[in-house]
Image (cartoon, rainbow, N blue to C red; front, side):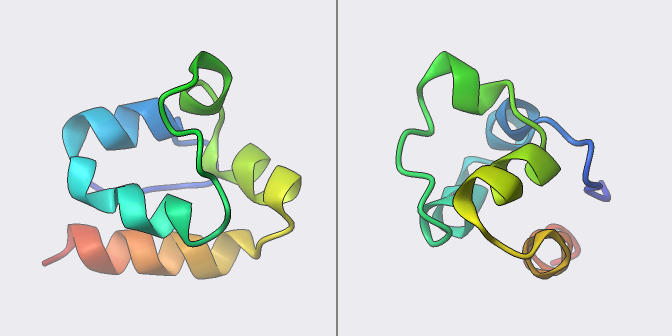
Length: 65
């Protein structure tokens, strides 16, 4: 699977819980709350002041392993 800015975080975590550390490292510590699980990667990065492209690169590299 290739992740994009529009991928929903809850969908990523449901498919691959081992991605959680990538979200925790950007300060997204409430991964279980309904609003964070419904956010897109882009929305989460905007809220947490993180570079969306950098997070996407990490997630996609992880997914390709």
